[in-house]
Image (tube, rainbow, N blue to C red; front, top):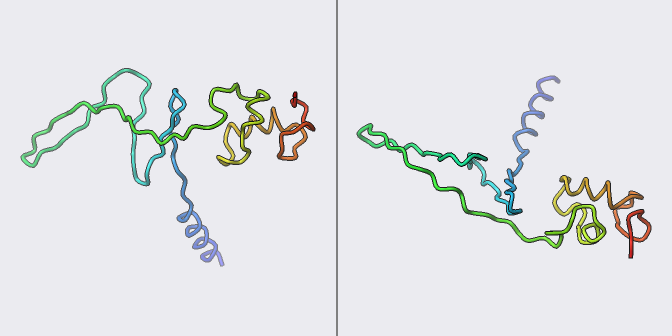
Length: 125
């Protein structure tokens, strides 16, 4: 019986996958592909990539900053989080359970009915 549970646990954990999303200071995001690796630095230092030649020579070349983004503009962009306008524009659960969803639950949906309307404490119109 223990072997069966171990097999099921291993099988279930192997089928679970998650996407890694990088959020940049300008509000844009980039979603990593499966198996893709990325190095993140807040300093202005240069990152070098090693290139090994067939004759065993090694070259180090400066890596250009990653410019690719896959961000999609949202109606809440530029609005202060937790404000009346932000609460009205935010779509609950559209991104899953994120920090924004937590802010919406805490500041907008005061009665816990998953709707921001005149029945909530922070509603003003």
